[in-house]
Length: 544
Ligand code: N01
Image (cartoon, rainbow, N blue to C red; front, side, top):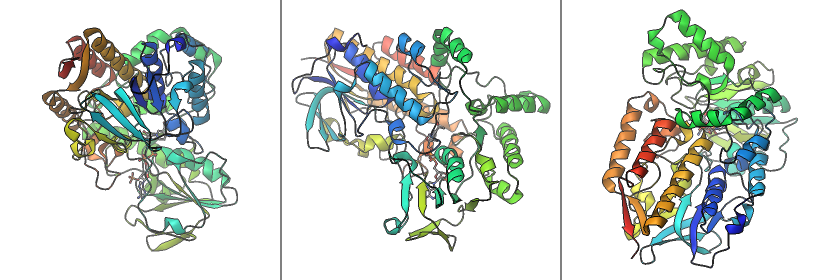
């Protein structure tokens, strides 16, 4: 039961302190924390219930690739001690029930307006308040606006002619139907072999009569080695939670696990293989940054890349299919590493076919299937696992106008610009949670979300105490941060891949590396230092 619900009142119109947009992990913690600090808070959520990305991504096999004991809130000791995860990596239904439990346990729902999408947010300079318009035509006024809109919440399907004519059923993994989708007896096509496709394909293959996978780019995927979470393992975590959480907050990726430790090129070939095998057997994301130089040195990168390629080839019986599934042409880890359960083995099944569309894209979707490379594929159902307009998409989906009518879409037309990934010059009292310019998608999102929400809450407390009205970054500080973030990215191999990190998956999107690469712990220190240094780099106005 919440100890803070009694403090909350429903504010009269025009008196709302904070409007939060989104009721996923970020929005719920923002609501909890800011309500606890005594503000009137309201949350708008487009979906019918809480959960954000975990509400929408209900596709078969959807599962987190950060261990469940780690991918969970740390703000409540009782919550983290009492909640019991059933598997090493939690599946979507379990994560969603966890989020629902949090919403109920802390009595958050009463402050959330569901099935309401924010369409426009305008900063009114006369009142120094945000006026947020919803798809229902309501206008909500709030002093602060917090965008907890998620990074992967605008699904992207290929811009191919003919989908409307398709007579079978089609779904996107990022917007999956609530009812069971039964592929039994069907000829199914899956387009996309990123994390979502790689999770869904093995399960669809087990159910469908025939599965055709349309692959544009082969990805690096490593085994999850998922398993039930033994009680002793969970107890051990719980006994050491404060230490593990602290390590996660101060580490590079926001997880408690052992990260990179030495450079590839400083050790012998035998030691390299030994370390890679050890990590492979551990499974999951410890295979991402295997060595300190894997994401900065092409020669070092090739060592891990070749190790994983050999593992892929060893899992696939047909050498031609194995070759097609072997990633080429971009550095290992410069696209998000996928984690899987039986992905490569799925291509040994008789009912599974792999179609390479790297040089012959899908031409059209027809009434009865699709055409690619001049060939027709007859299908009863189509699954698009084609990803998202990541990071900026969910923010720019709202028409956001700052001072002097400045449009965020215009301001970000050459790529996102933020200070610390928290605020944007010209947009006072508007905060982003885990958005571009912060570690965000390169980290355990829950850790990064908690860090941002706590920073924002401390900032609001400072403003209240000092009688301050508005805060926004100075342009020079923003320019400096963007320059620093770009410099970090260009020292790595990340820009060499056509990844969603860089907007390459969306035609016309500016090619800018969006997340901040400095690591969760160092980034936290920068944010904390800025705050303790009288919010250095921010322009703060006093209440008149
Ligand atoms: O999306 P993606 P996702 N024609 O963009 C292909 C997180 N996540 O939903 O590589 C044909 O990665 C595209 O091909 P290409 C995780 O951060 C986490 O899978 O652009 N193909 C690619 O193969 C992840 O990175 C988890 O050439 C087209 C695929 O579709 C992020 O979400 C699980 C195409 C899209 O892959 C996004 O993953 C799931 C076209 N026109 C997701 N357009 C876990 O925690 C795109 N593709 C485990």
